[in-house]
Image (cartoon, rainbow, N blue to C red; front, side, top):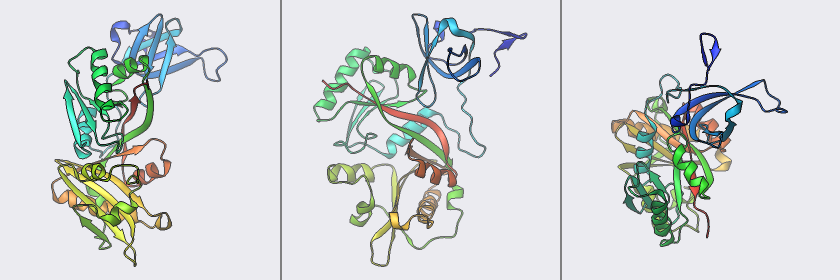
Length: 332
């Protein structure tokens, strides 16, 4: 990070830069085992009472005493990407991912979309804030909490870390709490299909009972009809299965094709059959079907702490695009 002008450190940010991506160098607090300076990069979400609050890409919030700043500047929102990965901004990916995992019912509130699916996954049971709600924030949040209460659901807001940093800060101040941290990853589609066709993988348009029996989210406490509506929703959905000699499923996957994007989900392998290349076989055949429909880019969503899944997706060529999580309204 370069802060100098003519060899001098300069603070070139002010409270008017709240909402922008900034880089701040500050004196490391006494007693911390680091160097003399600490560098912080993220969205400046507030600057009040002599304290700056900066939200990093991973969602961590850092508070910096104004008096400890030695340099600061606004930086452009251009996250690094590996060569060959599809380019897209956060809004495009969030919108496509939402279409690929649609709720059972939804309602527009200005630029917010309220989504519900009987509690089946946070993605389908949370607010997607793509713009201004058209109401003062307090009134909008009251409308949101009432809408979800009518359906027996907690109110949640899906938060893209940097895109929604200011909104997240306002919600935290009102007692909303973070949960379910995840990542959207992207990758090129063609390399996934660059393998010999695998006739063990069966492709179909709807999930049968065998597919559902291996899907780890299709458990008994979620409404089956809501789960099926979400799973089969989307522009063009494919399901993949690999069966063993007895006809039991040992690997499954789902892919939804939407224009240039192919969204992968539910890549599951039976524990006793892992490390046999079945996940690669499933994604390969789904990628082949998506390529045939004109897609060229791939995305998926993965829990931040799921190290095994992230290692698999890295081997398949996926890389982090942005972090997200959910904020849940305080309980009465």
